[in-house]
Image 1 (tube, rainbow, N blue to C red):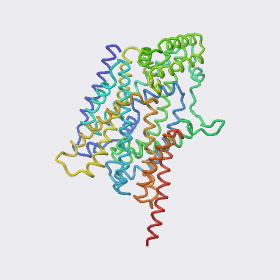
Image 2: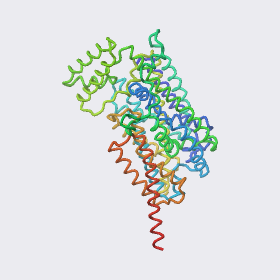
Image 3: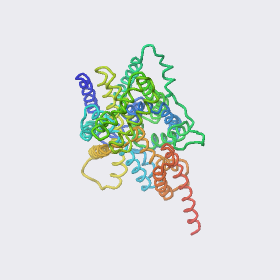
Image 4: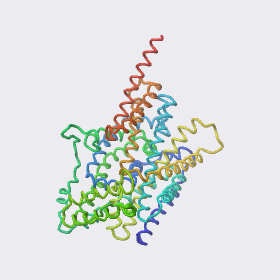
Length: 539
């Protein structure tokens, strides 16, 4: 990057840290640190919800996902608007009425401390792992750009955002997310404009996008053999699986619940959630469309045969160097002759050769496609702005996650099970924020060989736990005769079965959310019936 790009990057990131510290002035108690004294208007709630969900992974990985697999990933979000309505009707009034600090306090009132602790633990585990991957994403950007050691980069990036998150709590998170989202939207619009402008002047954009065969926005999931349950993204997995995932994420994951608990009242919470339901699908469509535009661009200008340049360099140090160079020459010849199908086949063979050379199972380069385009094709100054955008997006989601992880640890565990200490609740919350920040950095250290598209990896982690957590809440809301012992045992059995189904690769990960929720409800009903039978029988 140029000096101008570096200046823009450093000024933007340092400005956000300073702004976060400046906005960190709040009441020094639990309500001030975790809920910003419940004073936020709906538009700040909306930006905070969006900023928490839209991490760097969204902007780094989603265009690459569309580049290689088309627009069908957008179906993943089709169930979200419906989930927002359900949450506004059933979840928000309960949380608002009880004045809870965390979503899981409600479960102790409804069931018992065991169920509350189990559900909070599942959240801590899933969110802690996901946040580690979210820290890794921007570190990947900088290490790839500069050749820095990925582990040191994780430390620097994680450490910087911990500063304002630890010092300011929910108020600093909300206000920095507001500024971050403004910069993010500005950067995305500029990239989209330049992606179109860089295309050949005589090219009809609409025809080029249509002929790219990437506009597969709606897919049925049906094949000649019937419905493919392993198909990741189709209209049914999006509407049903996506609905259950969104219902659990926004209704029971405290990284999101904590955002709308900061609202002035439940009306402001509902406005923020409903507006999120309205804008999220178009926003994601636009981000994916960037990937399609980049694909069209590289249909006319020769792309690299493999987008992760560092892995290419590493592979060429092995005995496979000559084979890789031969494939590169074949790829270049095929592209020059406009035989894109043959060029694509050489690209796939090249990827497999790199995997073989480096003895790694999956070297998906989707995460590098958007970054490569930005670095090589955007003018000086804008590169620094877009790289800053990726960091800000990551910081917004990570900061909210750390705040929620600390909240659940303090409220659901420390204050519940640890005897009184001399340290204040405010200071205790800050120390737990630091501890979770360090934990997530450690997780980031092991994310380098995660294999999947980063956006898929985060959603897979969530899907392993979200369905079970949702099943516990749905049982609490809607099946009044189910008691604590039944739902607690049902949740443990359901979680083990979800993990087993995932390991056996029986269905696409989105269906795990549906399966987990239904398993908890079904097992809880059965177990409660058995317990009721024996209770009646002993009498």
